[in-house]
Image 1 (tube, rainbow, N blue to C red):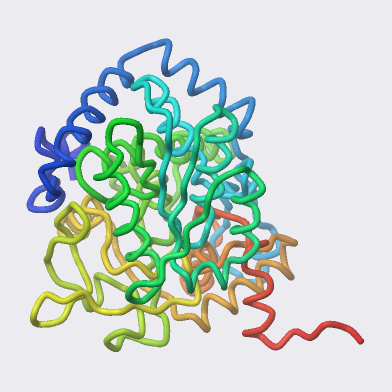
Image 2: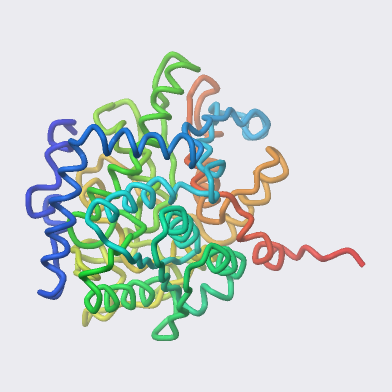
Length: 404
């Protein structure tokens, strides 16, 4: 695939081929157009970019290390494995890269209130953090089920001064949280900016979030060249909406020798309502502002999803991922709950790193792929977040007991 083609997308209407676009109520057209215009101005504004770079470095902790996982490499006996350590960022995940960019845009636009959706809670924590830092009122919508399984992050958001609204509709997870955030935005468009957390939604969100997150791939590219004097053979990242994956992949799209693999949530297996692998059971449709691969039934009704990971159980995938899938530039596979939990434990015990359950899906695929590759091959795994939020849930799943 040509880099020129990739850089020309999305088009002016926000389309990646047949995917993307802007499918929203008329009330939201103006704020989206306002956001689009302000974002593209900011993209070419040296002062904005300097301010963003300052906060990413001084507040968020960039650049993050590209860490050689020596014991995991030795255990698997194949490719040399590097971890892109987004778990070391302030708030514990890649989400703050995007939240920081969007809060600066909200400030430029004169907004006074922030809303967001969250699944695993990491985007909610990142949004609550930047809202507190800049003095914005903040409301975060979170499915009631996710509030229970990600209780630690609910407390973190509240500690930071944000209001957390549990959503009790439908499956009580991320899709419903997005619905409620969009309803809020329609009602409060004059004062409010919606910091959407992933590379999904109506234009300009997919391209904007991708560009705020590409710093991961830009840094990893420079770091692997410094460490190994060549590019990696493979990139691995989990895919929910897809921001951590597209952020890592995008700067490498023109490098034909770099294979890219996105790992979805295989849940309990590829059976209806037991997983969230959109490329292994989804079909073309429109959901929450954009056109992409969606898990839906024959009548277009959105199916329930399942994953041990609260951040990967969304029924749709970002439109740029759908386009890259069709172009065959990125391969998309899945890891089941059991494999993700095994990877979670293996990385903790071999490397002393407890990953987010989302990131553990990418580690699970690395455990499959690395032994099949030569010892001089190079893999970069995006360790998109840390696993503090998942420890209690994972301990219960794998049978760890408190000492008596």
